[in-house]
Image 1 (cartoon, one colour):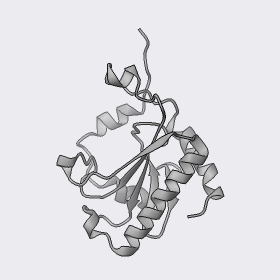
Image 2 (tube, helix red, strand yellow):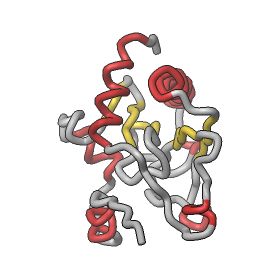
Image 3 (cartoon, helix red, strand yellow):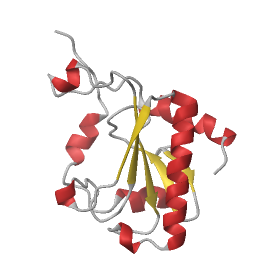
Length: 163
C-alpha cells in the first residue's frame, strides 16, 4: 500500500471549529505576507494562496473589508476584485500552465462557505486528468507541490504581469 503525505492538513484538522477571528481579516493585518502566503495586496482586496488547497496554485481573492455578501461590496471593491481574479488567471497560466480553471464564491454556510461572513473568490487551476482514481474511488486528493514552493514560484512571476 502506498502512503500519501500531506502534513499541512493536520493544522487544518486541529484548528477546525476553534478559530475565534476571521483569517481573511487577521492575515493581512499581521503584515507578514510571505508567512501568510499573501501574493498581492491591492487597495481594496488581496490575493492569498489557499493554505488547504484542492490543487497546487489554489488562490483566493478577498476584500479587506469584512463583508458577508457580494451585494455589500461597493463599486471600487467589486471592480478591483474582478481585476485581481483576472490577474490570478494570467499569473497561474504563465507560471503553472493549467488546462482550465474553476472560479467560485460560496455565500453562506449552506452554500459551502468555509469562511462564512467574509466573501472571497476561489481561483482553482485545473489540469486534464487531475481527477483520477484517487479522487474518484478513494475520495483522496494528491497535492503534488508544497505551499512554499508554489508561493515562491507565483511570487517570482507576479512582477512580469500588470494589474
